[in-house]
Amino acid sequence: MPKENKNNNHHDDKDMMKLVDNLNRKEDASLNRRAFLKASFGATVAIGIASAPFSALSYFKGDGENDHLVEIANVDELGVGESKTFSYPTSENPAILVRTPDDRFVAYNNKCTHLQCPVFYEVKENILLCPCHKGYFDVANGHPMAGPPQRELPKILLEVKNGKIFAIGREVRHG
Amino acid sequence: MDRKNIAFFSIFLFLAVNVVSLSNVIEGYYGEESGRVYLFTAIALISTLMATIAFFIWRKEEYRK
Ligand code: FES
Image (cartoon, rainbow over all chains, first blue to last red; front, side, top):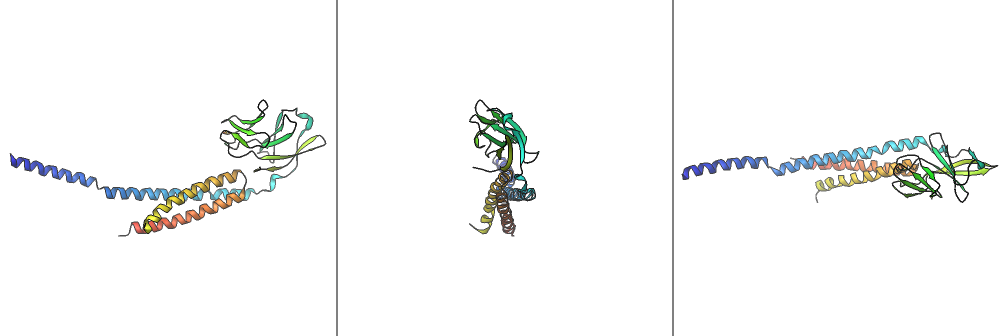
């Protein structure tokens, strides 16, 4: 009987040895740590390089096209609280002209600064509203008031001459 | 902390710098603020370069027999 017991113990030990082999934790941890660091380094390089194309694009885009004169509307075309869409400075930049309840003209590019949905004028609340994710912009200055947008709408500078409204320039960041 | 550990942890620091720079670059690009775009692109490239140096320092120490 005691002999058998001893034999059993021997087996147990062997099995344990195998398990311990599997659990060579130091090596395991260091291999994972190596892989983790390599992946992190790869991400660092990828994210770092990803910013370069934006520089190139903004260099080639230039700033020159923001200030030519375009006729948008006649003053009597819009009643108080009405709005009209147009494009400025190029046909790819949709914009909205608003005659506010206090009888001023204001205009902004109306691509939402969140994800570029068109922004509309809500006369009841006297506010610019982006319906996509309920972004609200102040009509008086184009700055975001509520919802996801963080940046103001580009402001279009206006001039009223001889009963006509002209766009004369644009300020992308303002106020 | 030894060289290896400093190199190891600095890579995560550079990763954070790059994430912040990229978000600033994108904001600057859409806000047409070319100065901001260039500044943060430069920061991102420098930090990428330093991360590369840190990575090679770490690799040299890590695989030294
Ligand atoms: S696109 Fe305007 S709030 Fe999201």
